[in-house]
Image 1: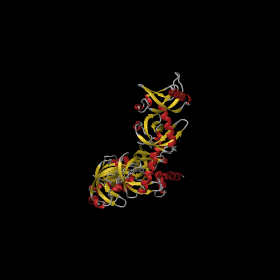
Image 2: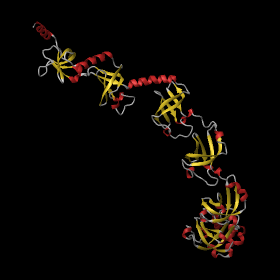
Image 3: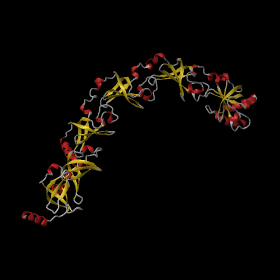
Image 4: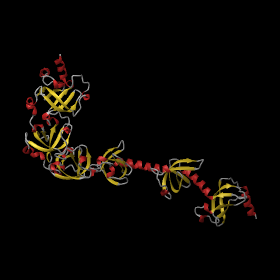
Length: 551
């Protein structure tokens, strides 16, 4: 009785403060809860869920609990074991570490914006602080234990913000510096392809990024690094240059193999026939890969002896296998010149024996240009007839006026240029020149008949016999003033005219329609006026001569 009285007095005199830690004793264990006596006038009930290990919640066990409230609606004291543990852990952590300290913890769950980590209490790990780059799958971290850096401690809100990323960066920087100090040019290191760009690839050398330029990847042609590398690929590279001040490292891949150009002249002597694959086509030529790292250029002029090829793409395609001949090798410049036409005999080699200047030849019109016609004399050999060599009598502005593709013609060889591979032909030279005996064909005063073939602002051209053209100046159309010749004469009209001028030197015949009914004396007078013109003076000056003749 005395002992009970003493215990009751002790309980009644003990001070209890809400939200404080108090000692308690488990006095009863139930299926889902335990009854705890803290020496207050009533006991408290704590759920077994608050215990990490429910087996520790046995009758008689002394535990520290948080006194949340002295009485609830039922007059019972409200206690919490888990909150007591949280309060104790918070105080321990605050004492044990400050902002910037490193602490170990276990990721417990994924939440909005990041992860929750158990470091004795729950702490928040933002998604941006999980790794060097924010991961897409946060579930992969749940259940794992890591070291973290304490970024922020909020005493009022009782929360802590952690970072794993800063520790990784710190570790990476230390490793990077250590690696930078240990590297030497010529070293071979294993790395991983981290990123690809148009100009090269960045290689992760276990904490230090190095640049592998596209020109140092292969001895051969490479249009883009992705043709031989992919992100995440392990690769062995050679250290080429180190800039310790700027922390830059240049890497090489092709340097780990022998330079195929070292013995290029032994492998590809001049004159040798080779096979290769077309890898690039440009306006001036085609690049052909002879072996990995070795390419040759076939210039567009070396594709054919006879055909005028405008672009290599007209006859070649990328990926096409072709044969060629080595024309030259420049080891220092790493250039090889190739020829395709050298695989065949040059048809021009025998031209001096087969053709001579002055020879009469036959051929077929193959093509027309503004200045002449190309005539095929034999397979691979063309001659060209200039417009000035097509007719003795007509002024040809375009070869289509008298020729068309496919016509068979006869011509005379005027000139042979083997170096430039040109043969000049003349059609008119295969015929007698009617102008040599022009005075026998036309005499001043002759009345001639002809057909108008062309109208110009200054007169009309009339085709006479022997395909000779005469010119009727506008002033010689009519006694009346003619404003526009096309109002009086049209192409195709048949006209009668008098010959009033014959100029063999300048190959001109002047005609007059209005003089068709002149007397011999009048025609003679007109002719004498024509003789006053200077040699070679254009017939356009006839108008002034006629005006002088009338005075």
